[in-house]
Image 1 (cartoon, rainbow, N blue to C red):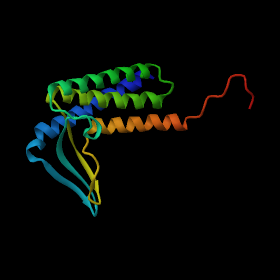
Image 2: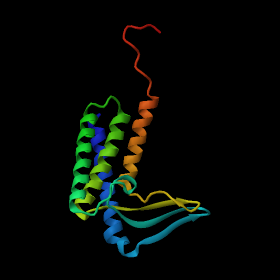
Image 3: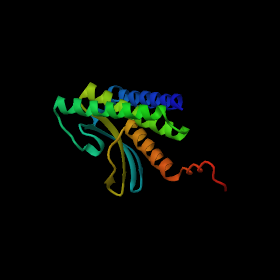
Image 4: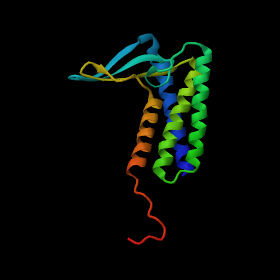
Length: 165
């Protein structure tokens, strides 16, 4: 199970870093700022450059190098815990979900140490309400956590040993 989780973690990390490289250096989104892409009535999807100095939804934001290093080290510690969990995963879904979270966490840690903040640029919105601006790493983390929750809620419980149906 560990191999499939590690493979997904590596794939997420590569996709995340390649996408960020394109947005930052090829498209030069930091200079452009905002590019409208899709508008279907009240629904839309744009590219909007945001530097997230905090964690999810910008919580715990801080501009100092110390706060960025602390958040990066915390994320690496959590990724280490999740890798250990992955090595003991009981099923493929758990290993894949943990791989998605680890790959995303490491991708965002790389940003913190390279840029002092996480590069976010996907902006989905509806009826004037904007969901938080995110990147591929964030999407992988959210999907991985959702899969872990679904697995915990809906996985059939193991039958007790020695019981009869």
